Image (cartoon, rainbow, N blue to C red; front, side, top):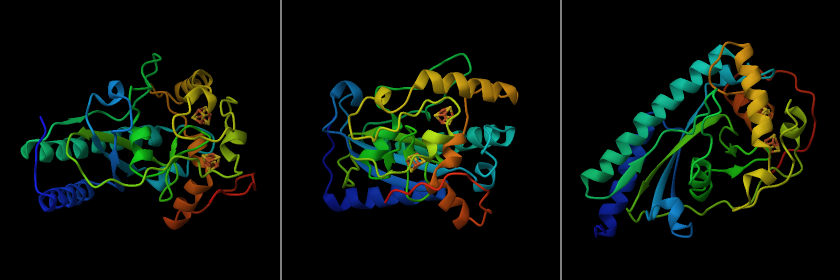
Length: 255
Ligand code: SF4
Ligand code: SF4
């Protein structure tokens, strides 16, 4: 169903959603035009809200050697906060007669469960102008690098959209390539539409991350080493007042 509302009403709704999401803990919010994407990925919905919540920098600072129980707890906390935030936004849209679907943040399970969706949250985030796909295949944001979790609300509300980001801004940086203990990161620069397999080896990543997590008694496949290694994360940690631990690479940071 297409709902026709005056532009001013939509602008007020859009701004109200941003305010509500910020109150619910969102660190970044963006609005994506999904119309250029295949209908099988979008379910015919034309717009999306991309929402990100930054990970606690003190927890991220402990990820140099891999996942910790604190990181696992923080990962679950942020996933829960994202689910609540996106549900609020979806409710606001439905109350005004729009279609809205909110889903969970993508989660990897120790039994090799899903880590992909027909429309990945990070694809929505790039279209919402929040960041780019880094060499490590994570969304990288100027605000906190890849040290965040993201989710999306799909809708038919015709918002004012952000300008999509369609190319990597990693530049010549290779810190995640060098840091990955699985050798999973190819170092190839992302452009919109590029298959994930050209950027990194998901199976090798999953195997290593599963081993690292299991060694800490964690039953979710998480790692965090490439999050920690990223210079954008290190900037986030410095801005947050978390001391910068020593890292061995001095490669150039992208723009
Ligand atoms: S999550 Fe760990 S194993 Fe996977 S790409 Fe990043 S550093 Fe490598
Ligand atoms: S570590 Fe460097 S190459 Fe990897 S995602 Fe961050 S900026 Fe990009």
